[in-house]
Every structure is written in C-alpha cells, then in structure tokens.
Image (cartoon, rainbow, N blue to C red):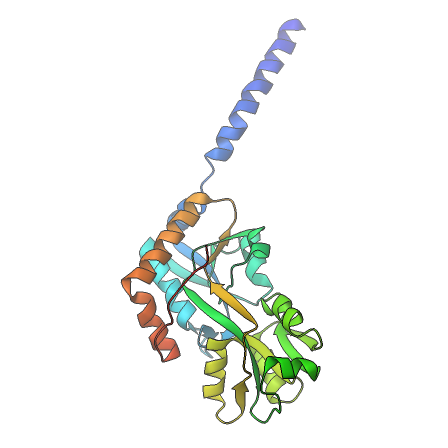
Length: 267
C-alpha cells in the first residue's frame, strides 16, 4: 500500500507539472491562423464606406481592404464574419474571430475583456440631423429633448447621455437602422462618427446635416482576443507599418474621398 501511495503521489506530481507545460505549448492565435490558412475577421455588414455586404454576398469597404491587407501580410486568406455592433466583442471573447476590424473604438471598458492595437484612424462622434431640423448645436438639441438613435453597445451608449442628458435614447443594432429611423422621422437625430456622417450626407443629398459640436473622440483600432501578447505584437507591427507606409492614407482617400486627418493617438 505504501508503494502504491507513493506511486500515485509521484504520478499526480508528474501530471501537475505537465499540465502547465501543455497549456503553455497550446498553439497561439498566430500559429492557429497560419496552420489553418485563413484569418477570421469580424466586420460590420452595413456601415459604408467602412464596410458593407453587396447583393452578391461580397464585402467591400475601407475596413474590408484593411482586413485583406492584414491577411496578405500573414500569407493567409481572409474569412469574413458578418457581425453587428454588440457582437464585435463577443466574437473575440468566444474566439469565433481572430480579429475585429469594424470601426471599433478602443476604450478602457472594452479593454477589460479584449485587446486593441494602436489606432489606424482617429475620428469624432457627432450628431446627424435632418436638413430641416431647427437645432443648430448639440446643446440646442439636448434642450429640446429630441429622440436620438444610437448603436446598441457602441460608443454612443456613453457619449450621448453624457452630453445630452435630456435626450430620449432609441437603440438599434446597425447604423443602417439608425439612419432609416432619422430619414423616416422615427428619430430626430443619430450619433455616429463624422466620417460615416459625411458619407450619409453625400448619399442623401439635401436630406441631412451635422449639428455643431463633438460628442466624443474615437480612436479606431483592430480588436483582438485578450491574453495573447504575441498575436497583439504582430497586429501592432502591421498597424504601425500600415500607417507609416502611406497605404492607410491611400485606402482612406479611396473610400472617403478626401485626405486622411493625422492619427494622433493618446497613449
């Protein structure tokens, strides 16, 4: 019995020592991506010119081109996972996606559960109104207690109540639904970044305009699952080279039609 107990104890000790080693030897995201030959990217399906899905099922847009560049750099094929705004985080938490490239603002709250790269774009959130709205500023719109459409789970969840405490909040899962609510009179305004707003104004001539003032500053970055430092290192290197090479400016010009503003991240 003494010998058996000693053997059992030795076996348990051996297994206990092996378990951490096996966990450490588990393939990281980079190794999994390379072995699989595909990069799984969560993107939004209705946020032009960042991204949208065509009737053919093909995705296109600024974020889509960035995703393709990243896959090309890794020498793998891009595999797009169409997501809505709330699912951008859960796709990473569940490891359904390797990255999220979806007009994704990095902040402390999100960074408690996922990781972010350095930004590839810096923008501001502003209020988009019907062209005939009587409100010229955010302050005026707030005093009127207007109905503001926002994205469920997006940056506006905090920015709008902070700047417009008297506003009535209406939540949607996609910006397309928000925009439709404004155009059909279901909402008096929507809160979105000024690059999206500019595109919406251009595509709906004479129907929309922005109110004066900013709701929030947004650093747009690539999201990644938390806990994989090597994967984040590679992604950051890609973003830094993408910004420095001029490729980012070229893609931004292609999709937004004007020169990209300077990327001045706050570290």
